[in-house]
Amino acid sequence: MPKAHPLFLEIASQLRELACSQDTTWSFGSYVNPETGLMHFEEELEAVQKEAGVDLSDVLRTCKTGKITKGETDVEPPQYRMEGITTDGVHIGLGVSFNAAEKWIELVTVFVVRQ
Image (cartoon, rainbow, N blue to C red; front, side):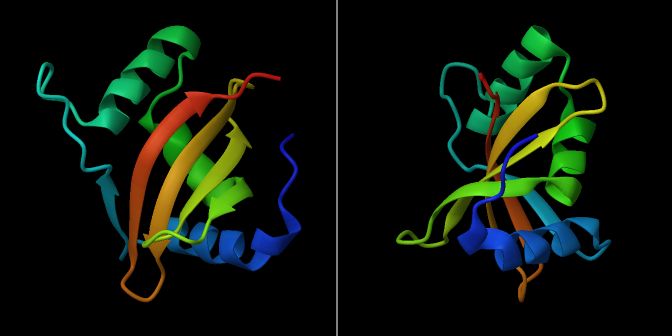
């Protein structure tokens, strides 16, 4: 199981609470690949789905139950690396940004964590 970064325990709690709220607006990273027309996050999700069977429900579950292991707080909005284990036992990582006051979460990246 991933180990939470101690500086981000409160932030992770806020993110998990926001992920469980029905009022939250979800979005994907804004970069669109001009060759495929897919957003960066969608391309990565497609790749991890082929590699490890990870789908969007696994990603959303990780946002609701995962731990923040790293963060970049010197960018706006801050970005965090959240990790969790899917129901199939796959260790995945997410790049996420969020704003609890404005009630939004942006999924930036998704990947299989290699040990």
